[in-house]
Image (cartoon, rainbow, N blue to C red):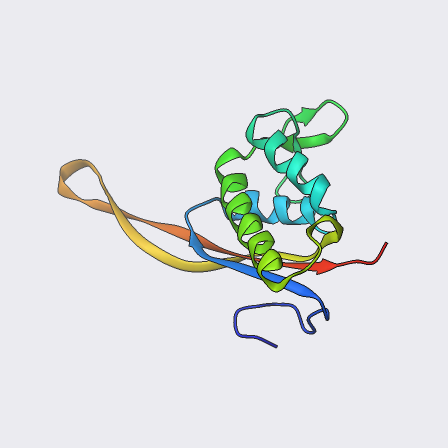
Length: 150
C-alpha cells in the first residue's frame, strides 16, 4: 500500500492522481466521490462539466440535513467549487494514463476518495476585543483509473 492512498491493491494497468489539502467542503467532496466511483471516462467528463455548468445535480447520500430535492435525482446539490478540484485531479490522472501509454477510451474510475486533511486554526474578531476560534478543514482527494478490456 502506498502512503496516502486508501486502496489496498492497485490494478495492473492503472493511473493514479492525488490532490492534497484542497480548500473545499469535505461533505460535498464525500458525496461527489460516491457519485463518481465506478464510472467510465466518457461519462465522467459529461458529469463533471454538467455539475460545473449546473446542469447535472450531485445526488447526496450523506449529510442530508436541509438538502433540497432535485428533479430525477432526489436530494442533491451543485457543488461547483468542489467539482473543479475533482476535475483537476481527474485531468491529472488522465494525463498520467496517457503518459503510461494506456488506452484512454477504455478507462474506468475504480477508486476515488475524499479524506480529511490538515486543519487550519483561524480567529474571527468578536465584540469587546475578544476573538473566536474557527477551524478550516482541508480535503485530500485521490483517484485511481484502470484500463478495462472491451
